Structures are given as structure tokens and as C-alpha cells.
Image 1 (spheres, one colour):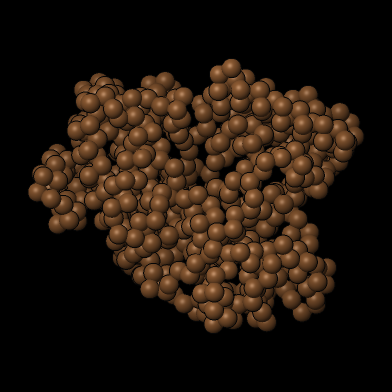
Image 2 (cartoon, rainbow, N blue to C red):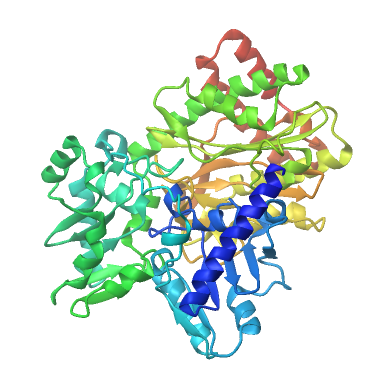
Length: 600
């Protein structure tokens, strides 16, 4: 039996075991998300329940299993990947965002019998998501349960919860002492009418307490909870993760440590006098329901979200330093790529390994900020493609190669996508490459007044594509953490409305794209920093400063499609790239980079 058929057979066995548990509990449908008790985008192996039950390993997607049917709901980034990985499993693919695709509640309401019961594991659903599902199902006579935990029994070889030690992130890198951050947090809580904050999101805790970890691949966070208040500050964490250094650090910063598993008991006994601010979108349903009836509750976004998003001078200096290191590594990598492709030995999987090798030569490199996406030809059209031994392609000089990669350096996080032309591009390929680049440049160049949201700017990245009836279905920009998660809110640049405005200090990606099934994918991504521009009669205006330092492939550009202003931006950017990186390169490397950054 092939490996693919063997895995499909295992998936069917696992679904059968789940259905047996469902039947025993009287459950008609079970909803399985991709997250963990901390609402993380990327999760430790212990919580990869959706991947285990379905075989689908994309970062976004939800599986629903009923007694007779099963489906995966995922967005456009994973349409092709989902179809490939679900083949033979009996799980159907539901393409989110398309008008003909029902939502999960719509699907279940239409297909389940009267008096059915839909269940979730309340540990891995946010309180707000659980409340929305409960309202929608119960209004249609369908019971809703939040206490179904089948993976505790059917996943017999389930990985243990991570026990890696948590370490201190010094203020020389964070730019602000923990006690100073806490003072700011308490002041923000007071303004919201609260005197305590319950934290569940791992990156919020890492930022607030100046700690980091290695529990989640690519994200430097540790599994824990935190409670911050005027009276006491508690870190709920497994004792195996506490080093003597961290214990001393907690004592110095007036932080009490308690068992990770005791957080629910603590919340249940909170007395009158506490008004706890909780973010229902980040706190899981189980802990939200544990909050004592005696204490007050303020349900709103955590003040840490915006504090963390607005980088201080030390953090900005750190990420700029990280960008230089990343640019050096990328120069050496892409030079190696050009020289090595003719050997016939370069593969998509090998690209990821080689990128790590070059980045690892740089000071303070910690690891990848996400798994490298290297898609050749049609694989590039799979937005979040990850090569496997079964799909791994050999790279040849006759197509587009899309490489999306990033690094975690101790002083900053990077994320960059470049599409390179291998061989002679067609006129259509050059047109498409240039249209995407025009969108990238137009967003990079834009000035905007104080109070502007990302969704008000998103069209700039799409305009050239839209004019030719082309589009991409993912967002244009996401926030970036500082030696933290590569995807960070609350700001974004996308078509969907987001009330958060862009302010100086925010770092966001700029990554328009175009994906043609079975042909190629194109994406151009830099990180951009919102900075102050001028203040006049109409108030403050802001602009973007591009942080990423690596050239775009000149071979893909149809210069006739670029305006004079767009050409000037590109030439100026390439001059900056060369001037920033050349002092750190050998003579041969300088010559290579000079050719890649020449004026058009």
C-alpha cells in the first residue's frame, strides 16, 4: 500500500473511532478547529487534533464530523493543498469565501435532524466563537455542548504537552522593563474600568513579561497563562519550564508562579473587588466560563494588543539590524541558487534547508519564523504550499519560483517573499509579475492621514490587477511581532473591515500576489514600518518606510507598465538595498548584487 493510501486508511479509522465516541455521548456533530487553549495560529504537537483527524496540516481550517459526513472548511490559501491532502479520506473540502459555500453552522442546521446535539471542546474555542455557535444552533432547536473531549482517549499516542524551559528576554532587546510595561497595562486597565487582566494569548504574555520560549515551532513562546492586577501578578506555568534564573526573575518582578493546570481553579475563586478585563476572542470558553460570578468582567480587546503592535525605538533598531543580516543571507542564498540550478540537484525541499544554512551563519539567528514556502511553477499557485517527499519538485531554468521565508533573530523577526524568473519569461508572465509589483510599489509609496485603516489602503495593492479582472484572495498585510509571532494583530491591510488604524511604530507586511492554478504564483513581500510624515492644516500624515533589504527580480519586469514614479521608487529601493548590504559582502557578492539592483 502506498504511503498516501496508508494515511487515508488511518484517517478513516480515526474518524470511525471519533464517531463511536460521538454515538456513546449522543453527539450528532463535532467541530474541530486548528488552534489550542491559547487561540494560537501555530500550535504545539499536543494540540494538533484537526491535523491528526484529517491529515490536513494547513495553518487555517476547521473540520466537522457528523455521524455520516465529514468536511474541512478552509480559505483560498489552502484550496489546492486541501484537495490534495484530503484525497481518499472521505472528508469533503468546503471552500470558504465562495458564494456557494455554506458556513459551518448553515451546513449543520440544514443537514442535522431535529433535536440534534453539536459539540465542541471548550478548551480550544474562544469564548466569543462559542457564544456565536451556541446562539445560532440553539435558536434553531439544536443543542450545543462544550464539554466533549474525545482526543483524550482516541488519540492513543498523543504527544505530551511541551516542557521546554522558558527564558528571559532582556530589556536591551525589548526596550522596556517588565515593571514599566505592567505600569502601563494597569493604567490602561483603569481607563477601561478594570483592575485585573487575564491573559491567554502566548505572545501577549511573552511581550508583557519579557519572556520567550521554544514550545511552538517558529514562534518563540512558552505555554502558560498570566494574571496581572493591582494586587497580584501570577504566571501559570508547568514547573518543568521554570529555571532557577526564571524563578529569580519572577521574584524580582513581583510575579507569583503557579501550576498551569490551576488557572481554572484560580478564576473560579476570584472574589468581589476584582474587575477582570478579558478578551472573549482570545480567552477560551472553558476558562471564560470558569470566571467567578463574584468578580466583575470587562469584555474587550486587551490593551496589550496595541502596545505590542507599536514598536519602540529599541525594537525598531533591532528589526532593522535583523533585516541587514537577513539581506546578507538572502544574497548568498540566491547567488547559490543561480549557480546550482543547472546541476539538476536543487529541489523545493532543499531550498528550505539551504535558506536555514545561510541564515544560521548570521549572529543571533534562532530559527525560521515559519516553514519556508518554495513553490516551483504550478506549486507556486498553492498560496501556502509546503513541499513533501511526494510533491518535491526539481528546480529547472524554465518557470517561476516563489519563495516565502522568514527568520527569527534575537533582535527581530523577518518575513519576505520573492518570485524569481528562471529562463526566459513570456510576455504574459512579465505582465503579471509587473502588475503585482505595481500594487506593491503603490502601497509602499502612499501617504495617508492620521486615522487611516488598512482596509482603506488595500485597493492600492489590487488596483492594477483589478483593472485587468485579476485578483488575489488573501490579505495584503499582517502585523509582525518583534522576536515573536510572524503573524500579529491587531492591524492589517486587507479588504475586510478592521477598525484598527495604522499608527507610527506598527510593522506590517506588504504582499500582493497573483495565483494561476497549475501555472504559477507571484507574490512580492516586504515589511513596512508606519512612520510620521508631516503635520499641517489637515493634521498629521503618515507614510511607510520599507524595512526589508533584498531586490526584486529585474528579469520579470516589463518597464513599459511602470510609471515614472514607480520606476523611481524601485530604483531608490534598490540603491538602498545595495548600500545597506554591500559593506558586509565579498567583492564577488557585491558584483552580483550590483547587477541585481541596477537602474531600470
